[in-house]
Amino acid sequence: MTIMIPIRHEQHRADTKRIDRYVFRHAPGIYMEVIDMPKTKNDIAEYRSYYLPSDFPVLLLSGEHWKISNVPSKHLHFHNCLEIGVCHSESGYMEFNGKERLFFKEGDITCIPRNIPHTTYSSPGTQSRWSYLFLNTQELFKNMAPQIRGFDLSLSAYKEYRHILSRDEYPYIYDLTAMIIREIGEQHPQYQASAMGLLLSLCIQLDRIQSKGGLETTLTSRPPENAMVLSPVLDYIEDHYAEQFDMNYLADICCLSPTHFRRLFHSIIGTSPLDFLNNTRITKACNLLRSTEHSILDISEMVGFRSVSSFNRHFMEAMQTTPRDYRNETLLAKASQEKMAIMDYTGWMYPEK
Image (cartoon, rainbow, N blue to C red; front, side, top):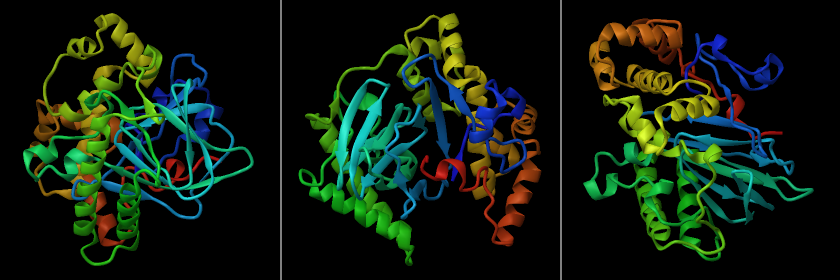
């Protein structure tokens, strides 16, 4: 399910008309947000934070309606997890940072790490059909051997990165991905165990390919500051949200002064680094409240808050309810077979028109 970083409505800075198209309220106090980027060819970038259940952190988006327009989007987007896509028909382009463009065709597999701004559009006069897998590899394989749970297929882990893999050159990648989509889509008994094994094989193969570098479908240059300079920081927060660290350390990761870093972070993400960190912690806490029986005190410590009072205060600010009430509401929703999540399948769960 798709969520955006939990924020209060009054924090939106854009005009109401534009926000109305992208902001959806599905739980008390929670919204999706279009985030303004500094001026580039694509002057708006969307940060899409996908909710991935802790027991099986994988999301499949597929179906006949998943057809991508041939009109280039006015904005790039980036997300909080690995995206693996399959082009089922037609062709088109994948664009990065408003500058670099890669061609894709039917049968191609795309591999987009977290926090990489990009957009996809079809060739003129066509609509390409897709299936997408979103996954958190570190969470998915965390109970396996260290050498397996350590890789995350992030951009920074490789010298070069192949974002598009053709079926002709890598038929086994296509076959593995197709099998995973079928397993998750059909949901036969033990499908998660089967899909996890296939996903492990797929990720190992992708790791081998990325370790070798690539050819024409490789991006080797690093984008300008206003596109992805914050990518290492977003990665760090996602991996270390439960730890205590100074915001100046995040500036050091970007090789920026603290003042410049805070200004740039706010201009791109739309909030301060500390607020973003706390919102990330609240998002993780929601997952734990929904899927575990840990006490609220334990959860507050697990996601990085130094006191339960601080946790309760930030949770109330973001969710407009208490952690206890949130847990009770989700339990009631499960009992009545309702979909209860931070966000329902709307908005970002469908391709742009």
